[in-house]
Image (cartoon, rainbow, N blue to C red; front, top):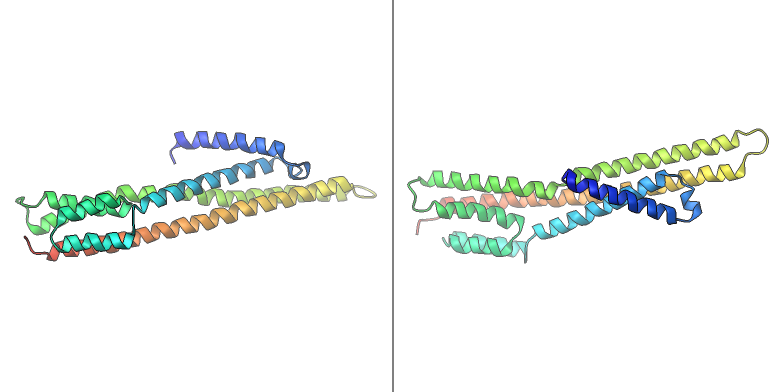
Length: 238
């Protein structure tokens, strides 16, 4: 995510989290100021997850992906390159955009002075260029999501540590331990642990889910473009 977009989101998340923190019950606010930071991280994780879900949903395009691939390859095999390009435009997903870019380059070079191998090389180059533009859109913010998940776990552990320090400090008083301070320290430790683990678990699960989706896209891209290139290589001129 661009810095000029991330900074306002971070500022808004901080403002919302501190407002939520101020409205929480006393026994939760006893977890200390780190609770507000963990709420901020929860908001950021939620924002990134929703943004990635929307992007990946749009990347899938319209209609059934398997049906699109079959229909597009059928048109290529039949020599109807304009028809295959039209199918790609109607589908509108990342895979369709990449394959469509290659087919458009191939179609534009038909009848040129280039040899067939040169036309195919130009087509392959167009596919690679289009894929280089589409892939970063699918991978964007995944590193941020993974980082937030790790940081949230560490902040939760930090809150746990500070809470336990307060608890042992209350127990170290001469005579009877200060029960209120002991309970406050334990409460701080447990709330920070719970929120840190929750944020980390959600972030890691969604990161792995999105990474798997991107890997599936890359595999489908490699397989589909290879098959299309083979069809173009072996098709007879019409």
